[in-house]
Amino acid sequence: MDYLTLVQKFVERGILKTPEIIEAFKKINRADFLLPHLKEEAGGDYALPLGFGQTISQPQVVAFMLELLAPKPGDKILDVGAGSGWTSALLAEIVGLPCPSSFRRSVGEKGKVLAVERIPELCEFGKKNISKYNFIEKGRVEFFCRDASGGLLKEAPFDKILVSAAAQEIPLVLREQLKIGGRLVLPVKNSIWLVVRKSEHDFEEKEFPGFVFVPLLSDKK
Image 1 (cartoon, rainbow, N blue to C red):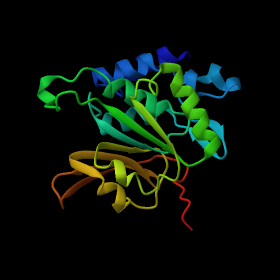
Image 2 (cartoon, rainbow, N blue to C red):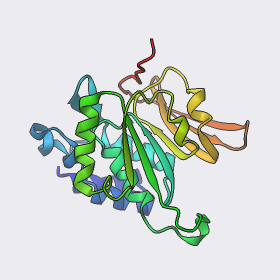
Image 3 (cartoon, one colour):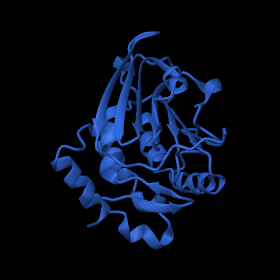
Image 4 (cartoon, rainbow, N blue to C red):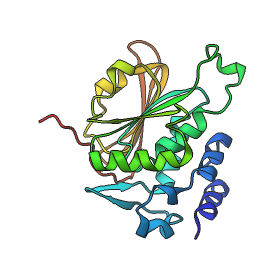
C-alpha cells in the first residue's frame, strides 16, 4: 500500500477527521522521514526503526495523537522527542495556515513548532528531513538538540505539547508549561493520555490504553 492510500483509509475509517490534519498528512510524506532503505515502507501502518533504539511511530498512532492534540493555525507547539521530524513537519504544516479571526491571535502572530531531540544523530537527521519542506528556513520550526524531558522553560508557555515516547508518569513540568486551555498528549507506559489545562491549578486528564512506545529518556541520572 502506498502512503496516500493509507491516509485515505484513515479518513474513511474516521481515524483522521479534522480537515487541517488530513491535509497535513497528505502533504507531508512519511517517506521523506525514513531511512533510505525503508522508504518503500512509508505506507505500512507500523513503526519503523530510525536507529539508536528509536522508531518513527505507527501512522495510525500519530493520527490518533494529533486528533487528540487538536493543533490549530497560529499555535505554538512543543514536540518532545522529534526523532525523524515527521510529527514536527505535520504540525508545522498546520500551525502555518492562515489564522481565522475566531482564533483571536495577536496581529502578526505566527504559528511555530519547537522540536526537541536528545540524540545528536537523530537531531541532525530530523533537521535535514524537515528542511525538505523549508519549514526551518521559514521560521516555522526551530530544532533543539538537547534533553527535552523537562520541556523548554524559556520558550513556555505552549498552546500544545506532543510527546512521542513513553514516560512513567505525566511530567508535572510539562503540564506547567501549558497555557490555560492548552493540551498535552503523551504516552504513559502503555496508554496515551490527554491533559487539558482548564485553569491555573486545574487539569483535566483522560486515558486511552492499549499502545506501545519506546521510553522517554532523560540525560538526568
